[in-house]
Image 1: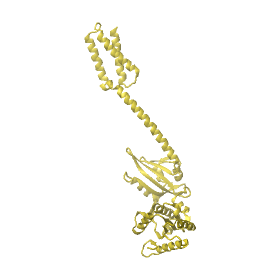
Image 2: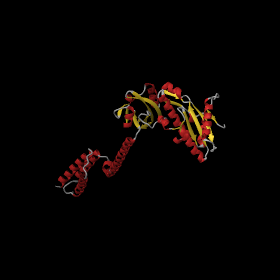
Image 3: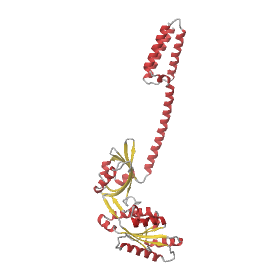
Image 4: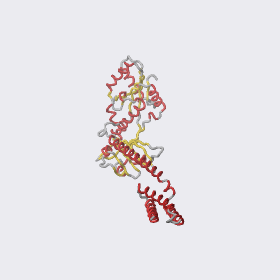
Length: 381
């Protein structure tokens, strides 16, 4: 009877090893069978009357040989440790999946809230665009081949567009370009700012796209011209400054070659360049829309209240540099805006405003007619 039981246990042991070898999970049954195997060996040692020692040795060696053949020692003795590690990894993976899904939903929500166009250009030649970009460029689906997008870019701007993207590297990953793209039967101006992103062994270009066609998106460089206060409002503004009795600089400037640019390329290009010029001036010297005024079509005024900002302007007028670099490129069009400046420091606050404005205007006229090739004139300098 004991021999039959021992034989049955040995068969169960063999089946267990085979099952484990093919990576099947059998749960609590596995533990039970291992207990039976151990009990079988114990009974075998006690049953000296029915089994010989030689049979016991042979059976034990056979069982050990089968075990070593099907298992490594780590499979036998490290099982529980592996199970614990597996549970930890499963929990970590679950948390990563939850975090990844949360980030995915936030990213989708962010894209949906964007009013500007957003584009993803992958290195496989495909391009994804959000809904605002579809409206700007006139596409009817969110994913399309980049070659289809480039086919709509104005021929004069296409080479510049392609070269800009082709030259992006890890060190120089940011870009800012302006170009025309065909929508229906006409072209609209596009301003695109983006960056080259590296991930694993792939690359992607992510960019924000704005239309600078006033008919579609009013918050543009061109529309800034229309938001500027006109000449009669400068009187009230200067009076309020004089009441504060704090010195400031009154700066008049004229963009002298804008009429020539209008004749050569059209008024839209001239307006774009004036808008870009004003943005650059505001960023470098003023940063306040209320300190800007439009005196006429190409004449403007600004008030600089910060001495440090004026020192930057003065150095730029005398020595050049990035602050007054007015070379601009729109697609395949590249032009330089030539401004002339008339400047007066206001430190006497009781004289009539009309006389202050007249003197500053005279300083601008002197700069415009200067034969020494200087583009500015400062009263009292």
